[in-house]
Amino acid sequence: MGISDLVLKKKSPEILKALDESPTHVRSLRKRIGGSASTIQTRIREMEEENIIEEKRQDNFPFKKILELTDLGENIADIMRNFEGLEQKRMIETVAFEREKDKLKWPLLFLFKHGEQGNTKIQKLTFLGKHELGIQIPYNFNPYQHGPFSKELAKDMGKLLTLGLVDPLENQYKLTEEGRKLAGEIYENLSSSEKQSIEELEKYSKLSLRRLLNRVYKKYPAESGSPNV
Image (cartoon, rainbow, N blue to C red; front, top):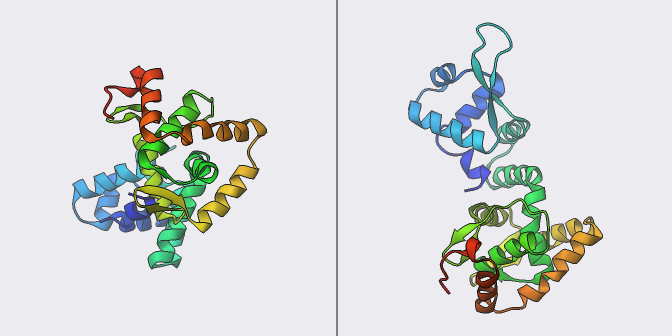
């Protein structure tokens, strides 16, 4: 689920609108917008996790905890006031991408330099880029059915789809024209060592999926779990 989907879920628009007008505490927010307390609490938690809203303690008595929009939340509220439909959705995801660009750029760059890749191979290339080539990639991996797996990376591939930067093509990810242009711009701004590390991944990207998985299982057994190839 992208951020644009979250902010359009039940009660999310009302929460954003209310906090855009003025910060407030949870009880007051529930009175202002009405509806299920559990739904409102769930939306608050979800938007806090995405750094759209945050909870702060008032500086003055009675020192209550209040909710307010973050900079990202303010940008999203502004977009929702002024745009509708697909344009609104795309603009919200674009704002979210800029916030997470340092993370989302890596799968884009791997597709840019090594061509179309499937889900499992993207996971393994990203893992090897981090653990074998020392690229500073902010994804954490856990053992799963086909070796090291990052839930956050899988989620981010969905974000790139929503943004129109990648296309699914017969179980493969392929950069769109827009995605290729953006990835090229990002690549040109990388350091020489980062470019070299990304290019070194070619020795893995050329392997068949089975050979790649066997290599990962053999070299990283603790991170891979039980083989399922």
